[in-house]
Image (cartoon, rainbow, N blue to C red):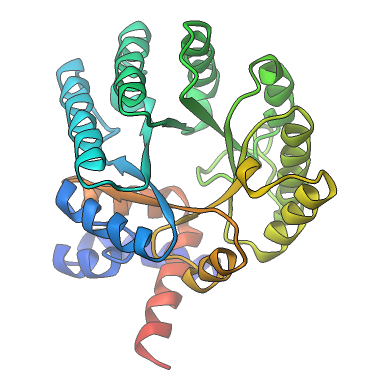
Length: 302
């Protein structure tokens, strides 16, 4: 499948934008905030919460970071006015992390304070390994300012993750654990699926034992089963953990979790940069290209 995945990725720039849009519309709400709100409302009707992500991390100046920040203010206004069950996710490169770390921290603090005013929550997305240390440092700085309605993401394939959990233990962080999507070298990230699975469960175990609220972000049924057993062994109620999935992926599995009474949150990206986002995510991880192609065929051919 690897050769096919890469062939699909190489061909993508030649594919007409309307075709890419058609392929991606199941996984991206659309270009506008109204699109995201309609998707979130539908998810809420099905008993699912959401996290809204505004696409646009590839900024080139701080004015663009300010514009993205203002868009998030509109997101909070919409969540409140439409009574949606949703928080937000944000990538720090979109707020200026690689341009001016202090400005990024201040932008994030503003965002988190807006969320607090609305009794809402901000999740800091984790990006590639070049940003990990700075992202965690900015998170700690906000927590030390007394801002508690903010959480972080840790990636199970990163070799450093268990050490990061230990370093953050004093904060009892709210953490989303995911496998990780960016292509990283072997000295930075585990390459085999079983190693990543093992580290995933080790991370969830360490976080639960430290009293953290854990969001288990995966479409892997085996990981979900093991995570549920960890929660049951500790006698945790459903208010102490949640599952998270991507929009349009494994909806059947998500529906099953909801029926069983577990909290499920769906990641809902939107924005004018939907095309760049689609290409970039596929280029970062060619395996996803094969997955989407196979999934698309299954929807067309019974």
